[in-house]
Image 1: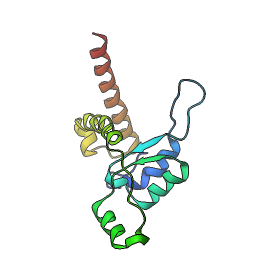
Image 2: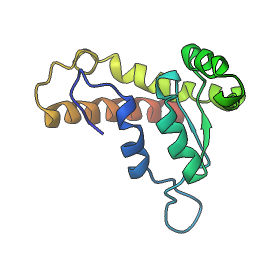
Image 3: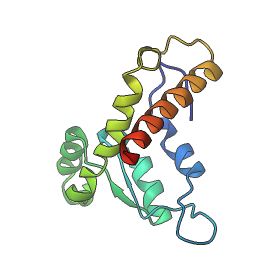
Image 4: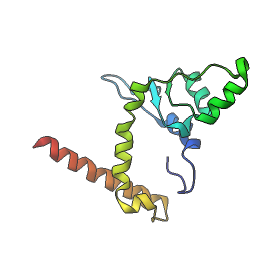
Length: 139
C-alpha cells in the first residue's frame, strides 16, 4: 500500500493484510498466514484484535507504555502479550531488504511527487537488488 510520505505505517496494517496472499506447494494462495511479525509500531489493540479474530499468531513486542497501562489496571488489564523471540528474529530479513531499498536516495527521501513515479522507483530498485542477488547465487 502506497501512502503519502508523512503518513504513518500502522494504519495500513489491516489493509495490507487483506491484500496478502501466501503461496503454498499446491492450490490457490492462502489469505491467512500462520503468523505476522512486526515491530512495536504495530502493537495497537486494534491490530492485535484483528489478528486474533483471524487466528493469526501476532509476533509483535509490546510497547513499554502499553505494558505499563495494562499493569496499572491490575487484573482488569488483561494478560501480557505472548512474544516468540525466535520468530521475531526472522523479521530481520525484511528489515535488511527495506534498508537496501532505502540505500537508493530517491526512495529514502521520497523526492518523487507522484505515487506512480515513486512506485516505479521502488520496482526498479527491487529489480536491481534481485538481479544482483541472482548473479551472486549463479556464480
